[in-house]
Length: 170
Image (cartoon, rainbow, N blue to C red; front, side, top):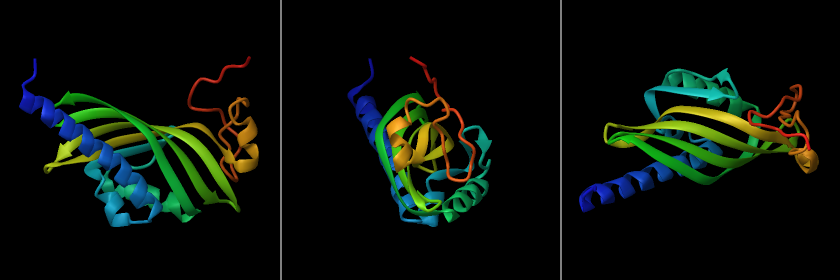
């Protein structure tokens, strides 16, 4: 059994990772590029629905900056962070979130999951890899059917596509 000190350290690490996830969303919404860059390791990787979004901090930031250039105001809301420690300085996590994004002349509403790898880097927990997978994406007028349409990922200007997760016809 883990010692009391080990158990407390695990709780502290869990809280730091949860704060990292919240900070990522806050600095994204605030367009704080320096704060966002600080969330990632130097050799970070970002993937969005199978699309490679960078394999270094600079590459990830170029990808995110380009994506943000097409957006107006945004609200990123995390709902849960499920964390599994894989070592004293490493963990994986699944983050469920909803996004509201001004884009393409409308407001987009989306549910996404981030599949993350975290590492303690220079004494601070950072994201080493982040894979964003879309559950559903669409303008507010399409939300009513977004979980009953097999092509429920509908970014403005793009062809409708299937969710990155199972869709079951009933």
